[in-house]
Length: 502
Image 1 (cartoon, helix red, strand yellow):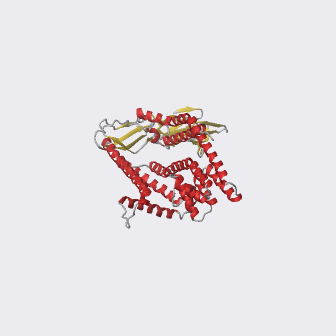
Image 2 (spheres, rainbow, N blue to C red; image 1 turned 90 degrees about the horizontal axis):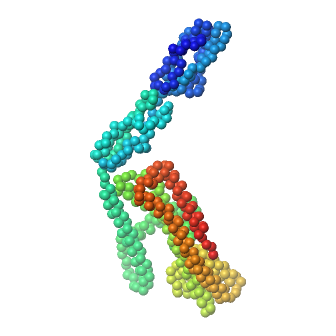
Image 3 (cartoon, rainbow, N blue to C red; image 1 turned 60 degrees about the vertical axis):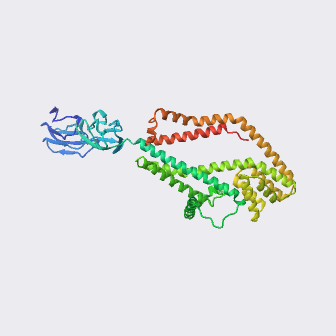
């Protein structure tokens, strides 16, 4: 009991947190006519209580919080005495035990840091040291296969206790079996790819010699042919369903150049292939996880779908890049053949037909397509305009413009194509010289682009778990995303620096 002028108080303060109720007895002296008090909880004042005489009162604090009590005494002579008690701390909230997962899978006989990823937090004490966390863990707990329950227990300074139990599933160390299954699966995929490539090569050979051989009246499709036909019918059905959506048709316009260059039916068919490839990637990822006796997470599913969807774009981009390069490299030969044809008195359609007969490869396909378009009644201007749109090569655009001007105004086509032939010849020589001069710079740029990847592979070989936090936590995923963006920016800057325009 603390005594002051004008009052007696049983507990002036309680700075140490307690989980018990705090009961405070307050009794004013005889010279106090009446008084009032206000309880302040966590900085907020409550309702004032007025005592009309000088009788004692009992104040009970029962809830969790930081309290103070403000008293105001009134003497018989009208004097006012105001004062405030010390702080009272009540903590009845038990601490929280935070664990990354409610269930963990470990291999039999493995060493596990039982407190890794475990944290105890209290509203009053803050983060509690792991040394105060006790468990029922036994060093032999993970020596047998099965589900093991580990109980964590922690108490705060006020005496509040929390208990939490998580389940550890102890499994056999079957890395060799998983590795064997993965090798078998990869081998089967490689064999399937080799068969597909070999079949594709045989189809190309068959197409080349079919015009010199007799075809049977009835042709029974092989199993592989039936699979290809089934695949094509599935793509057609899916593309027809997608074509009913306006947004898909708008999006398909971005694939028009691929559609024309690779003889796809429509741009919607390319989008259908992208979506089907995404689903195949997802199915393969689920199968790989099943082989590992694991469940694919939602983020891994999204990544598999995105990889499958983007892969088709990459394949078409690479194919189109090589296609344009082949056409650009053989364009000079086509111009020479056309120029010789013009010198011999041939017309433009006859020159196009002659190029289609004399040359092979992608340039042959293009001029063969142009010949068929002329047979269908299209004008030479329209045919060359479509050719320029397909390949997007400046030289083809220049030839297209020249032929359009010649058709409109007339002129000596031999001189025009001789000038084009000379220009392309000089440009090709300059390109070869430039390629020889910049070859060392290109090698340096490739080394700079591959250096970070080689660095990562080297660290992963020395310490396999070094980069594991990047794929096991949300923060790691965010950092990985930022790293990929920085790496892509790094590649773009290097290519920009090393690029030489003609």
